[in-house]
Image (cartoon, rainbow, N blue to C red; front, side, top):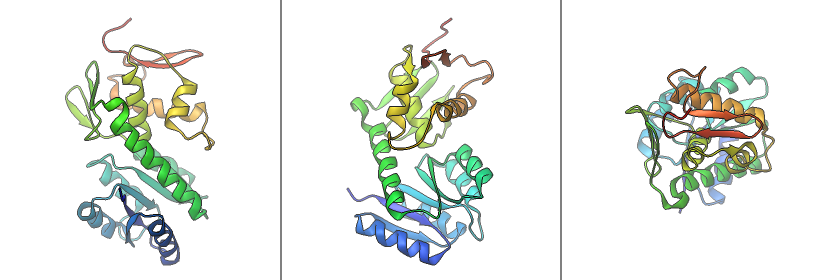
Length: 232
């Protein structure tokens, strides 16, 4: 299968280098030099993944990410300068799945792309299940659709994977170690603090009162579980 990638980058030397390397790896690539062109190409090209620079003319990367997330859960990898920490955090909160700080190794970027695409495919085919449910939370793994109390929501890939694993093991505790191993590659420097932040973001989208979570429970010293009903 040849994956389609939308590369959104206004610096021509970077765009040319990344696009050339991705094509050599067998990917189909289109390049957008600004946010407005990216939005048009996203809707016409139908990419499997977006590589998104944050600093863009005409329509900024964060605004582009926000607009895409209203329509789709497509994986997004952000390219950021090291000084853009606040924007990077905002981008992750908006739904970006990963980020690569500039300057970066194209080889590392391609490795991140492959890792994100692997997780996307795993989410779609795990155990050959196409639908998961826990209480009023329903996941359609094929269409990557999630509904909570009958309302559709969009989740970035890592949150989607976390939720899938928790619902697949509903009413059972999943350890922090198992969640980190399943959702994040073992060669990346994520820690349990990162897991806690992603769980908090999930709760903000699933819980009636995120400050007093009823669906995703913390089991101190062990991990997390999602409950299928009014468990006490």
